[in-house]
Amino acid sequence: MEWLDNQINESLDILIESETLIGMELRAMLKNFKEEKKIVGYTFGKLCILHYEAFTDCLNEDIYKVAAAIELLILSYDIIDDLQDKDADYSWSNTPELSLNIAIAMLVMASKNIRETSFRHRGLAVETLEKYALLSINGQQLDLLNGCCEEQSYLQMIEQKSGSLTGMSCLIGEALAKGIVSTQVEEYGKYIGIIQQIKNDIQSLKTWGRKNDLLNKKYSLPIIYLLSKENNVSKSVRNYYNGDIVTILDNNAIEKELTAGGAIRYAMSIKNIYKHKALSDLESVALSNASKEYLKKLMK
Figure 1 (tube, rainbow, N blue to C red):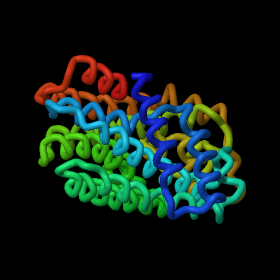
Figure 2: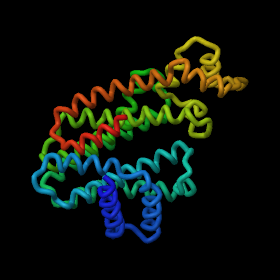
Figure 3: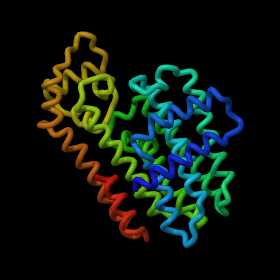
Figure 4: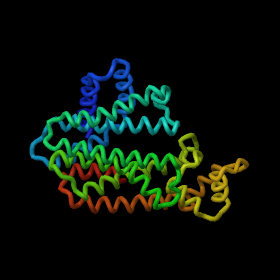
């Protein structure tokens, strides 16, 4: 899949260079931000390409432009999310006001560039992008409000925030090839995003620093489980979340409770439920074996 990353990266460079409505300063910052993020790869763009290729008999080279446009949208969301959380080390955190302008520009460029492609069904692709982009923003709003402190409400929130973006990427590829979208692709697309978010939530708790969700009084599945228990560690965490200024957190005891107490296992079991659902839907979709293997890796 490395060649797809290279192709998307090249298309991103072309999109940025060819946009005549942005100035030199904005273009330079956009380039720098893209370079910072390219090391993690272009998963969302690849999801789009793989689903387009699966349902078409004739490859339109504009698909790489669409994949690049999707990655512009994803990068804009990453920037906005980092600026809101104030816990990132990327360069855009050093100039929040200017970086916000870059993010807004990328949002507009994403739909603009899809609309300018030669695809017959580009209108449906833009409609799909706008629908799921708004759902993701709503999920992000719920996350910032930090009120999803129960399993059901939390899963609904991450389905919107994270699942919408992976689902969108798969569906845009299908839409461009077929002119319609399917429930199965939508479902396993969303499940992949949910799985990735749960994995990130678990990873957050492994480092006792400024990105740690518990220290930031944020909710995630392991924390929701921990708070539901009746023991001294859970009580101290509840007091901390409730604003008790005299609460002293014992990070060793908390880390032990998260692992030995079942919180991490609980989150993993929820992740595996979504993995099972995703695999079930995936079996009914006519993707190549290589594409299915790539999707399965995202579910691990």
